[in-house]
Length: 193
Image 1 (cartoon, rainbow, N blue to C red):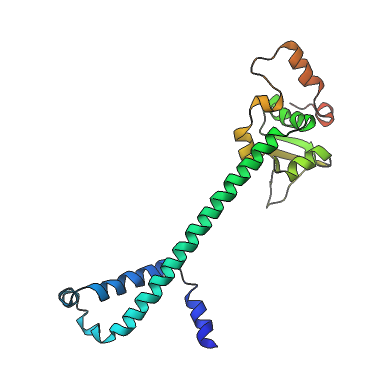
Image 2 (image 1 turned 30 degrees about the horizontal axis):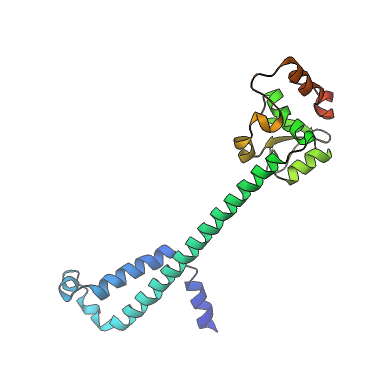
């Protein structure tokens, strides 16, 4: 039982150690006797069986760790691509009220705005990860009453275009008044910009 426990403790060592052991034992096994004499390692030839076993063990662990690393990297990349496509779809599927919330960032020209956290639209956007609460002190959010500072998620901020939230580069007077008349109720209550 102790053998298995110590075996699994050994496999928890960093891969770098096994890579070094694999290289050193590989040099010992695959080098000619002349090189071993120059390195003063010719006396260790009596331990070739143990060195071969150490080489096999460490090389197999390095290969297994490499395969696991490649799998994890590919899995991570797949999740990132999937998440980005979900964000793009969420931006395309914004309803009128969600667009109004995102327009507030543009109207106020701020990266963070105070919003009522109990507003169902804000809560929904937080659940979709379109908005994120700003952590200010030790991972906890500080707000006033039910208002908390929020920002757009980094990727949403990156891909969001004015067309997504019904804004134009050069709006007409009619379009400007439409935007001002259709601001969220909480934005009209707190005009501090």
